Image (cartoon, rainbow, N blue to C red):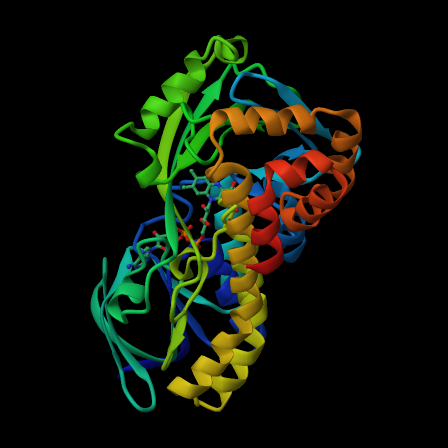
Length: 401
Ligand SMILES: Cc1cc2nc3c(=O)[nH]c(=O)nc-3n(C[C@H](O)[C@H](O)[C@H](O)COP(=O)(O)OP(=O)(O)OC[C@H]3O[C@@H](n4cnc5c(N)ncnc54)[C@H](O)[C@@H]3O)c2cc1C
């Protein structure tokens, strides 16, 4: 007997768990496959979840600390402090608890999960996809109307069905420490070519510990490793008062794929989350955008599953619903490139000098939203004369990309 499911979801990360639950909510049967023997390990994440994503999932119990502010450090150690203690901007969560709870929600709505199990072959037929799976209980052949790849940055599903590559993949490296002397509810962002070329490093409070991380792109790293950047950050004489008491308790490294792949959907196959290249180019955050992608696609995919009509042209049509997300990613990448990635340290210092002025800091506090920096970017270009000169290329990028 070959078992038939409406959908098979490969990967029980946060996006695979959320997707399975949403498919159940629309009345579909789901088999969720996870290659590891437990959920949420290994994890590679700074653990920031924005309020919208938290609301969608209702997992306030996983919050370690609400974050309301940021100290943004220039390459020479100048600090611009933003935020309001009464307005939480994001939440620092325990990813293990968060991921487990998201997957538990899907099990509660009817998803069948198989741990230590992965697909080893998949063939698209007229009426179904035939998937051979292999796991701790041996091999089995199962069928589904729709095969979903929520299997992360190195997605097997994406490679198997030649669905393209994310526009860019950053390298994220993070250590968890005790003894960092940060401010309660405030994250630190460090900039500069020596510690995070083209990007930034971070210190995120997580209750008893702090997550110190850095991300960049291979072509900007010029032979240095992520560990070199971390050592320089922690040994920087301008900053080392904060790092002096740090003691490492864990380390993680992982890819951050950003820029939706060329074919996120094809006949009977769809990609979600990191597998689809959904991470934000400005922060690397993938959970909020992944949830949003699921919310956009599931109601339309549900109809196609019910009709068992998931042919190429219908899937292409459904994929077009991601057009706004793609455009938004492009704009944010252009904004990031103009204000950060393509700036040298001297240009960054000039930007910080303007940001530090009280009226500009007020503007940042009023319109700044790490989830949507475009509003603030446009506002600054309009209202801060220096920015027109400093960021002429940004104006073009924001307005026309
Ligand atoms: C250093 C770093 C910091 C980050 N910080 C943040 C942050 O603060 N906030 C944020 O929102 N995002 C952050 N991200 C990104 C975030 O971690 C990802 O976007 C998010 O985990 C994506 O979820 P996902 O479910 O798509 O993929 P994943 O979390 O990668 O889950 C994929 C799952 O699929 C499983 N899998 C893979 N292949 C197979 C297979 N063949 N068969 C079966 N199972 C398989 C994996 O074991 C895993 O459980 C960070 C990333 C890095 C590297």
